[in-house]
Image 1: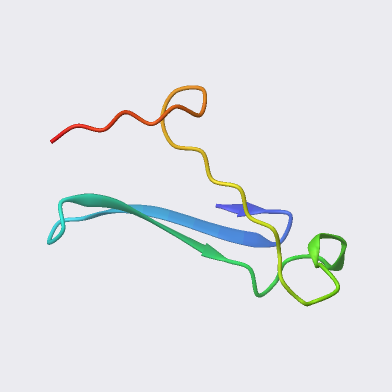
Image 2: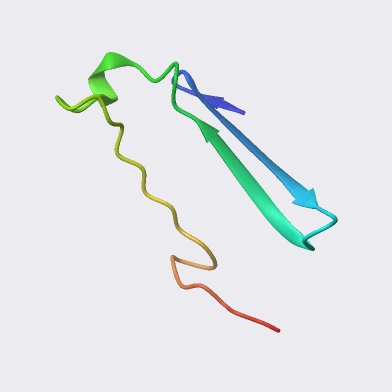
Length: 55
């Protein structure tokens, strides 16, 4: 999916048995760029930001 120029991909990695998320910030708009050239990124996992870990 593309969100304001940022590309986000999510897929199942069968070898690892895990969900993999890839975020491409190369095309992030200037308004998101910090003076040092980085783009802030916040990631939430689980319901309402609480991760549930199962083994």
